[in-house]
Length: 149
Image 1 (cartoon, rainbow, N blue to C red):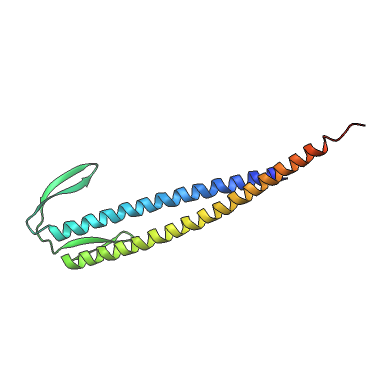
Image 2: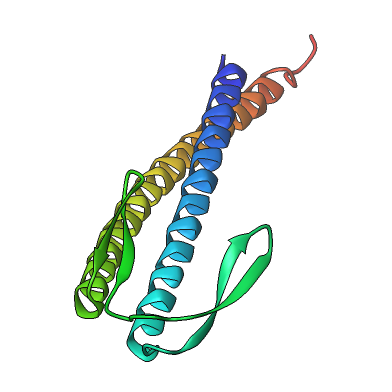
């Protein structure tokens, strides 16, 4: 019976570990998005009208282009929507996006912490079951060593 319980606990622990890995991957993706937002903010704040930049075309191809008007910045809003902002408003929109990403990271880290707590509890249960199984084996061995009369 305890062997079956140990197998169930082991399976649960493995599932939790997989969930934690998935959440950690999500955290890394959100952090990457934050980095990109930071880079966009820095670019908006440092570039000027008339600056030459390399614009990505996709597939690793770029095109050199000159900024006609830095006060016309298009920012993704999410859900495949974007809006045009003046420079300061674009920075504000990106800062707001960054705050939302911070909140996402906090939520993901809370989920990870909860799963790690659950994992620790299951590991303790597994250790207790293993100790009980060992004690039972020791008792059975001790009973089988009686005198033969």
